[in-house]
Amino acid sequence: MASILVVEDDEDVRPLICAMLVKAGHTVRQAGNGVEGVKLYREAPSDLVVTDVVMPEQEGLGMIVELRRINPSVRIIAMSGGFAYDPKLYLHMATSLGADRVLRKPFQVADLMSAVNALLAPPAAPPPP
Image (tube, rainbow, N blue to C red; front, side):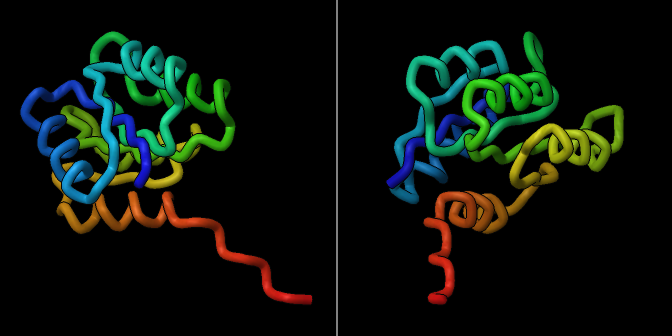
């Protein structure tokens, strides 16, 4: 299947997301913040990056910008619970900086898998002339 990089600082949430993706047949690498995530991506680009937005070291927003510089076609899912601020604001910023899909925490497994499957699906063939 696909190679997926999960970047999430929450030590309880990250293993759950990784387990869901592994169960679906994907190869998963993980990082606890944006600095680690960018480093892992530079070492071996993934087919998809799933990242939290609010993290220590480097937030997901900065990481999205940096990943887009490295590879403009990287596929990114951003997720946020927002903490003290409205998560919709963070997710809107993530979209405007280049996230392909956003998920508001807490989300359902089906929502994550739907976003993953949509972004990993091969592009549709153009209609015949």
